[in-house]
Length: 528
Image (cartoon, rainbow, N blue to C red; front, side):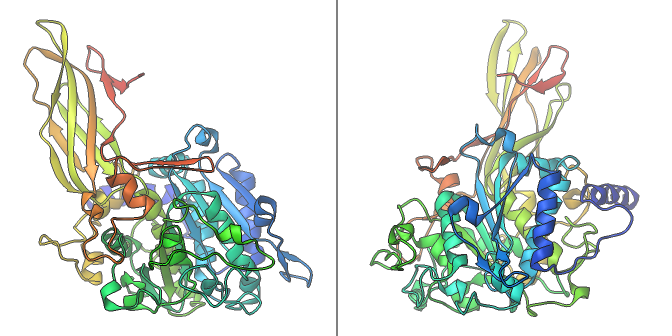
């Protein structure tokens, strides 16, 4: 078994872009990040589009990145299978910001290396190919481009993460970075997002506002999903410098702020504080740009503090060796945050995939992805009754359990959250979790078809319901059901949103592509 696992791990390393020598990560300056992004766009133009905030949204760049008048363009990378994107307006969207504070250095390089990994692995790793084909990923490595270039926290003296119209901010859309991000979010329907920071280490989520600081207001309406997601994020991210990420609400484990991006992205489209949303009033930025429709800003936006040191030592950044493995040899700040982005890209939408189907034995094996808990999953088989020549249908016994992303169980059997160290240690790290080249399609569920003796299998399809407990909001402030696109998209079948060419349609029953069988028992995807 050890030999097989080692061989498969080597194959996975090749899929991740490695050969014999692991690549050591290093923090890249602004100019190098721009250069690398442009190179990726040239090499993978069918999968990545690269543009600037000036071209897309008319946001003129600040100057000073290089010579005194060199523009500090904010580059925006959009990764998906662009050939099929137009015909799929409901393709779920995720967003990753490398930095808002220019002296917090891990995020920009991590977002670049995430882009590099999924682009260079597209043709060799089926799991990555599925992500790129079925998700829409927007990456902004350096929103505060001038601050990042100059190694300064603020943008011309403005703290970007206090500059969003939420919770009566001191400033409001005064920075170019905040305006760029506002335009990006207005143009899209993101469901999940990460903004990277530094100065401590943790994965955090709403609430993080002054208004919600009262202990009776600790939980947002989407607290259940965010708590479980952040726990699983910590586990799959793995360690850096020997530590897992702690996780929790911003107000509980870090500190509240006014004008923070994370709560703005989550709650600026609905009156979370009871008095509605007030647009920014800036002479140079029209108030209607911060006047939002009720469906625009309902994003679960996680604030990730990447490292205690804002510029960690080179030796702690890690390598690309065994990059998908949370316990891999390349442990460090860059690979674990690449895994965080992979995780949220995976989790943004549930799916069901048939891994293997044998008409002779009747054994069907399948995987449920894009979720943590499987409430119910079952096979529906169509078969021909050889006596009557009629096609009949039969549902097999339903099963439930955890997906591979919750392998080992983030939650204990009595429903209480494990500690962050236990959560990380209990993630399933054996061969069947990360050491297969077709990761993660390895078949978490299986059943043996019970069909009449004189019958011939013609078609199978698998169905699943997932994460239904996220629809609860007990003890939430305000006392509302879940407000995020993300939770409603998998728990509310009546949820429908359309905005700027993007769509979200709620669903509670997820189906695999059907598999059809010939009279000889050979299978292939159904043509219907």
